[in-house]
Image (cartoon, rainbow, N blue to C red; front, side):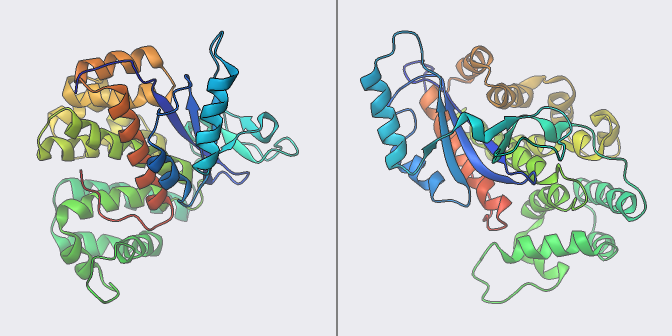
Length: 334
């Protein structure tokens, strides 16, 4: 695809409810293109597990009639305008004293350092990190099984996610060996990484971190495909997206978390210095997270992906994230 700015980029963000759980999507558009995202995609997003809202940032001199056309499109697709008094922006630790009447929380509050784990929480996180190490090193199945058996929360989430795949086996998966056999090691690696984020029950940030990392991983995979890279590169792009927030999850420098992991030099360069092809993809996704139009435009031009292609990729990534958050997502495929 040839890069173009004919269609403006749109930005999607999950909104947390008052409990910190991602329960809504916000479409934030810098332009008023009626076809900024295909109506079918907007409808599919709105039919998912999350409420859908939009916010349009009007430019100087933009016609009321043009704005009305966009409002009509979004409303017909199942999206609602976001009332300013219903959303609270927070970039620090989320407190319990939210303003009265606020329904949704936006911002990067979930990237704040985690509370210091104690007792069983600390043990669970240590086991989770060891699990990442085993999977990244392609350890034997029995080693992974033995570790999972030490933590009922981790094992519960694995079996719950595997049973949600609906892979046509006609039976419930009740053992780790079954799960590994059905998934295959590549998909197991993906789901175990997702499980690490979803299994932090005592950490209020975990649900939003899962949403963020799911979008990152899937969007990077799809960007890799759109840029013409092969399947192994797409797999590495997904892994880089998944690993990019491990430092935030564990409250440790990312370089320290990555030390014992068996990952390629390309993934390490991307994660620690945003270098190489994978680093380029990660930078594009991060620009979208921060609504940085200039950086996003530059990154997409370098990849030769136009705004329309990017908007579709972002929508697809958020569709997949909704399924992951609801425990219903199928096996990812680019």
